[in-house]
Length: 593
Image (cartoon, rainbow, N blue to C red):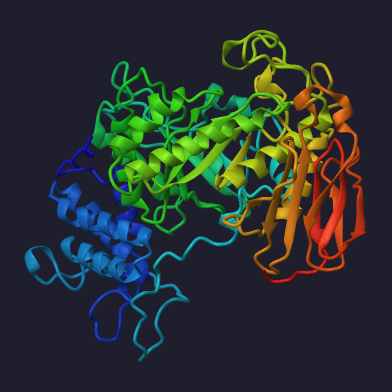
C-alpha cells in the first residue's frame, strides 16, 4: 500500500501552536546569517525558519506540498548519513517555502522578522567578520549512551516514587513509557482544534499510581534516560479499524506532539530534560482489525516531518512459541512498507524462566530472513521481555491457567528468575537484537492481582506469595546491576558464541570497545534434562589473554554481596567451574584483538 497523500492544506499546526511559533520561535537565530546576507548561518536556523514559513502558509490555505516533499527527502538523506545531500535538500525546502535565498517558482524570498524582538546571546552565532559553517546544526550521530541495549518498560509503576534513582543504580538507559499518546486524549473533540497535553489523564494514568498529564510524564524523565513513546489514534479511529477518522487532523496531532517533545527549542514543553527521539506506532496490533498500515504510513510521515532525526518503531507482536505472528503480522507488514519508512522492528517475548528464552531464536531469525527478502533495513528490538519469580495466580499469560496447556506457568525461585533475566539479554544480543526492555515495571504490582505481570519486577511490592516485603530488592535487581556494569560499553556487533562441548552449556564472548578486552558470560541449563545432579559443577575452558582472569557469579546474595575470585590461566586457557548459576569471566587486562 502506498503512503496516503498529504492534503494540500495539511494544517501543520493547530491555531495555538501557529501563534506560538509566530511570536516566540522567530528568535534571534532567525536574524543570524553570514555577513553576505545569503541565508541562515546554520541548519538549525534553517529548520526553524522552514517550520515557521510552512505554518504561516498553511494557515493561509496555501499549498506546501513541494516544500514538505523536499523536507521529507532531506530526512531520508540524514538517515542515510549523507550530510551533503541533507544540507542541499534542507536549503531547497526552505526556498520552496519562500525563505531566504529563494522562494516559490524561483523568485527571491525574504525571511520576515518581527519589528521588535529581544536578541539573546547565541553560542552558535558566527563571530563578526567570519563566515558561518553551513553544516552547523546537522543532527549528530547517536551517542554511545544511545547504543546501550538496557531498557525497562516502564520504570514507574504503582506509586513507585523514585524509579529513576533505582534505574540509575542498576544502569538502565532506556524507558518505554507506559502512558501512550492517545489522539482522543490530546484532542477530545475533532471539531475543536485545541490540543492539550497538560490535562490529567485520570483513570488512564492511574496504573502508575497517580494521575499525571502527558507533560508531567515526559518532563519527569531525567536526562540520563532515553525515552520510547507510543502513538495511537484511539478514540478517533474508524469503526473496527486502526485508520484515523481524519488523516489530516491526526497528522497535525502527531506533528505537534513530536515538536513539543523533540528538544529542538521550537515550541518545546518547559522543563524537558530527555527529548523523545524514538516513537512507536501502536502496540501489539490485532491482525483481524484492519488499517494498521494506514496508521503506520500516516504516523511515520508526520513524525519525520516534525523531527528528521527521530526514529520510527513498528508495533511489536507477541511470539508465543510459534511462528504464527511471522506469517500473520510481520511478513504482510514488510511487504507493504514504503522504503525507509521504519527504523526498528519490535518483538515481545515472555513465559517462564525454565529455558523458554531459547524459543525467541526462531522468531528473530525468521524476522531477519523476511526483512532481508523484502529489502527492509531496520534494527530488531524487544521492548517487552518478561520473566517472573514466584507463582502467578489466576489466569496466566494469553488466557491460559498457570498449570494448564502449553503456556503453563510453573513456580520460579528468585535465583532462577535472576539468572533468566541475564540469559534473556545475553541470548537476545547474541541473536542481533539491539535493545531489550524488561517488562512490566521496575517494581512489582502491574495489575495488583498476583497474575503473571504482577511478578516480573525487580523490586517486591509486599503482596502475594513468595514476597519478601515492599521495597526489598530481588536477586534479579542485583543481577541486572552486575550485567550493566560488566557489559555496558561493549561492541554489540561483536558478540560471539563459543563452543563449550555440551548442548546445555552456553558461552558468549563480548568485547569492550575501549580496551578490546574480552568478557565471557557462561551458564548451564542444568534443568533441561530434569536432573538436579546436572547442577553440580562442571569445568569449561575459555581462551584468555593474560595470566589471570576475574570470575564473578551473576546471582548475588540477598543483600547484593558478590562472589568474585581471580583464577590463573594455563597457556592462554582458563579452566573454570560452572555450577547452577551463570558467571562472568573477564580478562584481567585489556589486550586489543
